[in-house]
Image (cartoon, rainbow, N blue to C red; front, side):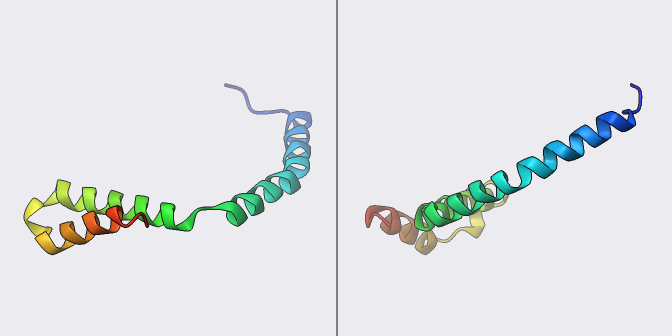
Length: 75
């Protein structure tokens, strides 16, 4: 694989400079419309699955009950 030419490097930088403001607008829109409750629930589920995979004895019944009640309440 050969190193990029100076013209290629300049072209890539121009593309990133043009894309930067558009990507920032997309990022701000995603932040404004994010469903934080759903994201938090998904992260909590992922965390619990990870803990279960490492050591099933570390999860108490109370934690599992809270998880089930949390899901049932629709939050």
